[in-house]
Length: 409
Image 1 (cartoon, rainbow, N blue to C red):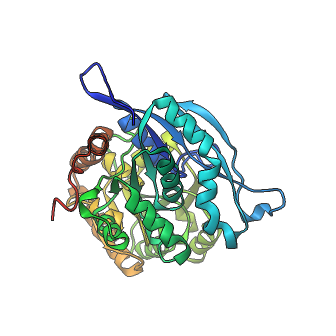
Image 2 (cartoon, rainbow, N blue to C red):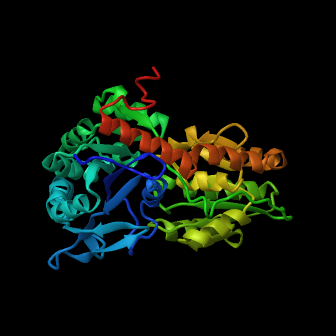
Image 3 (tube, one colour):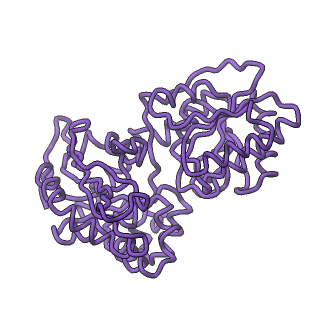
């Protein structure tokens, strides 16, 4: 293990590696953006290299089985980011073999990454397959690792017996396990049989350069905004049905839906069937400033997810001062505070209709300055970065994990 250096402020500075399939790449620039934001939030204390494995599809496998990605490497914000490719086998074999394949094909990149930063630890994101692959690499290099569980990696993978053993080993091998929400931390501790003193809660952060408070002047037509992947778990069908009922009740409103995904065609058809196509705009994927501009131009943000590990778009909306209507679907439960908006039951059209009416009736009572201030205090890079660095320091010093759920019991 390498020793830390001392920066000009007298603080310890050390080298680390981020190992995560969840990281932006040329084909999916929005993928794992929250991991990239954590890198920026901690870069004043940690010299990072990043390994973000991407799938490679052999020529003899139909391309329809998996999207191909480009490999490569690049310096981003001073950090070396590498996208090594691993082979994807036909679906029935995929998850039985993917973790060892990732570990095998990423070995060279891992050695380079560790050498470049003189790494003393690794931060792995997701239980499977990144956690399982990262555990193999860290064990071989005798490096400790911190593991962040984001939610979907637990809830969607744990029931499969072929993966469960890998997931348990990844969780139990970590020196610290970070969860992005309280409910997730409770579930992870119970499901993986972890020592609660090693589990802590640290939320994701956001880009404060773009998502800042703005005063809004409302017009005669209410502007409602939704951002997210257009897939079943995100609940956009519930949103469209609820929005249609709100319109029937006489509310003059438009709905902008930012994002893309496998359900887009079906959702566009649903909007047409409900008679609201003229009031709903599907924008596709927006990043960076165009997305921030949509936030600044909206009056109300909605997150209708059936299941949500965290919800970065939720804190981005709050950071601009937008009130929200969100579901009790995991992450939002611990994000939406009193005065931020309305929480309703997930996968329930009537509940979402009631939540929309409630929020619309109280729009003038929400204090956008207070909403933005609460978001900044809890989720800004300085707040989240400080929590992350405190965990890294504890792991390297062999000290208790700060604010563990075990210490709070």
